[in-house]
Amino acid sequence: MTPAPERPATIGNRFLLLSVLFAIGATLLWQHFAAEPQDRAPINDATHLETTVIAEGLEFPWSLAFLPDGSFLVSEREGRLQHIAADGKTRREITGLPDIYVSGQSGLFDITLAPDFAQSQTVYFAFAGGSADENNTELARAQLDIENAQLQDVQIIFRALPKTKGKAHYGGRILFMPDGTLLLTLGDRFAYRDHAQNHDDHLGTVVRLMPDGNIPADNPFKDGRAPEVYTHGNRNVQGIALYPDSETIWFHEHGPRGGDEVNILKSGTNYGWPVVTYGREYSGLTITNKRHMKGMEDPLLHWTPSIAPSGMAFYTGDKMPQWRGDLFVGALAGQHLRRLDIEGGRIIKQEKLLTKLEARIRDVRSGPDGYLYILTDALDGQLLRYGPKR
Image 1 (cartoon, rainbow, N blue to C red):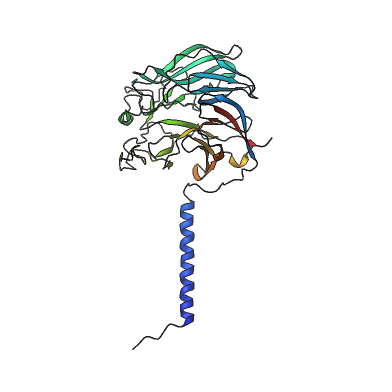
Image 2 (tube, rainbow, N blue to C red):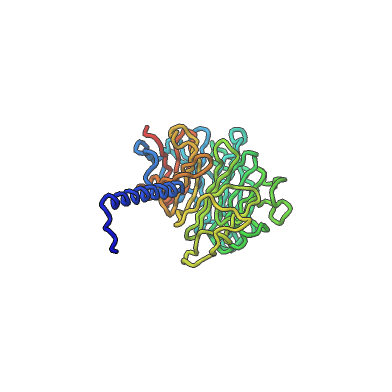
């Protein structure tokens, strides 16, 4: 018997049911992807914000520190330290730096004030020390004589070993922990990446020191050959910051071709490089197929393709309250400022800012006046203020 043709009402009911099921599936799929950090339209209305040039003509500026009088210290990778007035109208070069090896990625790196700077006038700075045949990251402290624009009593309190050939992957960021110890980020020196999987030397690590360079008694590998090591399995850490109102420290590091990572710093932890990574060789060849491994920390977030992250800071000001507690990361290859919207310690969304600058961003800091301050990485680099229109 030939089946009777379906009646229009039956067809309509089935179409309606399929439409409802499709709508539910689409909603669930959208919610799944919305829960993951990804690029999308700006989250906050930034039309009321402006970028103001404070200073320009800086030669590959690398790091920024705020002095109590509102002026700035800016390190230039080429081996100079500049003192810039709060209004940017005057500038003086600070003398007294030690010999610095400048080539490729090497040079003068981070500049940081001691927590008791108001009393001690002590500053800390990282730089590449040595020669073309043997060089690595070093850490020094000195007294800043701002009246005479010079550093005095310069003491090198740490030298990363071994010194190697090459001119890449130095790390170079400094951060004081809430307990008064300090962290110095290092790199694997590019050609020596397998060293990152041991803690017998300083390559591919973050080290923790006392302010005078001595070794904290509770360092995780204090009885080993490199007792300064705090974490390992790191490729090239160039951003580190304290999460506001906590003792939690976040950091990021460069991947190769993809695989830039955002992590939380934990004593004694192995972050996997180069055994696990989301990145590939610059040639496109595979480094490893492993993305996870027992005993190695997974990243909170990875950027693939890479944005080449650099300086980073949590925003703690009051000029942009909708951004308080968010993490800002400078992008070199990406040529923008990346905002990570954080709630409850989780990265929930991302936003690209300052894309029209078309500039490599080397450093970003949350200023004491509630504005963000940014350094652009160029032969004619700039110090910029970003925030509400004045």
